[in-house]
Length: 130
Image (tube, rainbow, N blue to C red; front, top):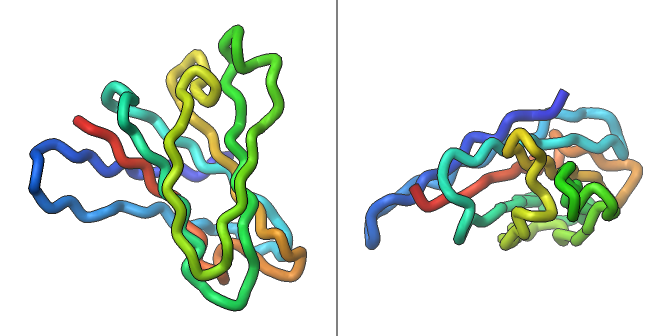
């Protein structure tokens, strides 16, 4: 079962919004974890945040899982890497990542087989304009 991500909604210009990050819970070394995002607003301008805050541990592979629309169901997952001690922001292509139910799935995997997602404090956030 995928870990549900809490969205951060940004509404008013020049206003402060606390970034909501959903922490990884997988404690198995080398194990991956899927995160499920349910957009509640139009995804134009939406951003995915992947935090890998613990330096000197492991980089993370981020897999953008294809949805099941006609375009994406014939594609393989797209991947990117987030270095240890870094936080990355990604713009998503909704036609690729959204399922027919409107959900988005992203998978995190530690590059090092001796690291686990919970110990390195990996987390995922989703910013949407509401």
